Length: 413
Image (cartoon, rainbow, N blue to C red; front, side):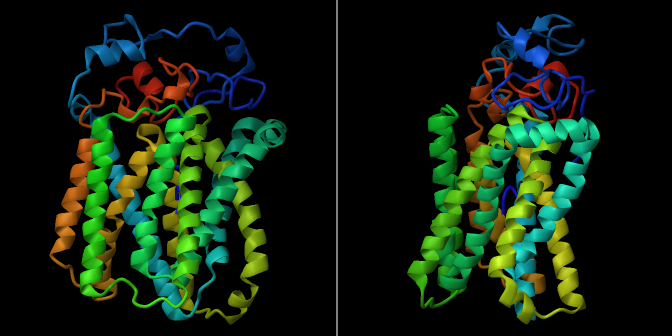
């Protein structure tokens, strides 16, 4: 799922409405930039801090804080690291839970991949587009649609197709093969971030990614040894191609969403994702899921599973953008690698599975890789986005951003 954002603290809107992504952001909490702020932007902005650890009221910048609190293991001394670590596992558990509910729906005789996800987009649209209209008003929201709608349409399209093709992949190929190909999403994220977002990875970050992938490799080897890799697949090549396509869509959508939430309010981005996703997904479901919808089984269990699936996926889509701000699309993806372990933990109760001895080893190795990834990072780690300028002057100040943490060092995120 993407990526499959909790109510944010926002400031008072005083601009003439949303403006294009490329302009500078205001310094109020999670609020879109105003035209005035864009015109006044010049040299890197100096941010005043409150009395506290960073200067007793002196003017300071992101660079100043990095110099004062730099060095190896610096990020481990911040609460942000532990928040990111826990958030990543919450997302991995949520992602695994939706997969489990999809399996339970299939067991009941209900397999409607596009329509199943439609309810999530509807809920995202109701909650976050509703709040966006409350903040902007219909006139400003209409301007947002006309000016930036095409950008959000692309984001939603990537997200919807990633979800759709991964379901098709599992129909035609083995679980082991599909999971191996899903590594491609990490590769796509790293390449896109490096080329287009100007992200430069430290060698310890690359090592952390490789350690996490090694842990995932042990999980897949365990599945193969125990014979839980899905068995024979009569159309494996077709399924593998679908899995490769899904992983590509996921990687692209992750990077695109990370870019969006660094510059725009969370409620706007998630609301637009829900709005356009609902339209795209609804159209796709109407075309491809009609026969499956008519033949599906409808009973109390199916209703419960669909409700649980929608609510968990809604939570996933709500929290993922916060992860993109606090960390990055790359860290988001390697955090999800523990999903197989959580899947077995859930499966012990739901499907009466047993934990093979390699699973705990693999889980520890992936968690170790997450620590290695941040071992040489500054106090801001991946929250400092290279495309926002040295002092993040091009970014929004909102939940999870480095800019907000400089302005308000006492906030939790």
